[in-house]
Image 1 (cartoon, helix red, strand yellow):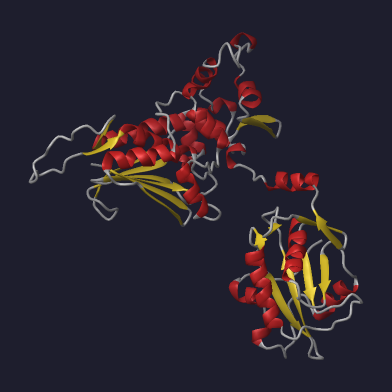
Image 2 (spheres, rainbow, N blue to C red; image 1 turned 30 degrees about the horizontal axis):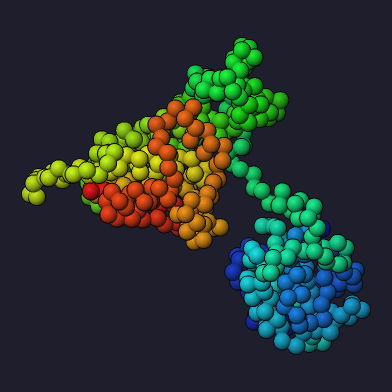
Length: 433
């Protein structure tokens, strides 16, 4: 059942009585006249409509909002009694403020409220709250989940809650078919080298006659799907095992822009800039080669050789090899592939290396930004992360995690790496010596 924003079109209605959402959003909403509103109200309460005489119990109102949000959305109208008679609200502004507070503080995750105050000719006013549940399941602050059955709400059963949680699992971009890709775009040598590492255990090459690349991708690794009657590699499958030229052609935003600046900021002159393209293994190795062109990577801190203070050329910065490899690998496997306008960048300065990665800030910072420092994963691409981190994939990785990276980087340079997330970007800066 479609919901429409309630808008009173009466000329006598003062500007202050209009919804603040009308000010916040420039997109015009469909108008619902008082006649249409009353037609909905006279139909009585149902799964999508709740009527309240007044706002008196914030806890109960939070439960009603949660129930509507978990059942597809709906409308709560304040100022109408059980006999469908409009009694009106005395102080509509205070009701609106309290509803905003409830939506932000009493419901998890918070709901952006769409609120309208509608005036009638007799001077009575009602308040309509449009509930839109896009991030369900929702719960009250005390951890209770509600759903709406007909005109009543009730607490969700374990089975109903499980269904809500299943719906909440977002479609991962890595599992989407790579548009325009075919099985011919897969580097079979790389794929079968990976599979042979599991020979004698999970994989028996003798049973896979004729090297069925498509079957291996679809049934064994879940890296291909049937789309329109044809087998198509997923985004993850193409990134992991695609030919370099195919990945560059079909997924151009998967490249990495590497830049060496002649200073310590990105306003310094550019010495070299390169676009690193190909599958993840190729980009990983290319990034390491670009870094070693301008920096020295060491396995231990040891003693740093001395350089003349007045040397005409600054000394090359030193970094711990395991920290660099872990940082590059994390950037490749955890980047937000759904963001089209943000590219992974590798910036090399005189005394630091910065990695800028696309990552939607909403829902990630600041709480998750703290959690990842303690090893709590925030993995957007579990398939890519699992295969790329496997020794069978062939990348020369040093075992570790972000907590290990932070600890070892600080022990090496006496400075903790800088981490920040904003404007759909995740930034990591490593300091050299």
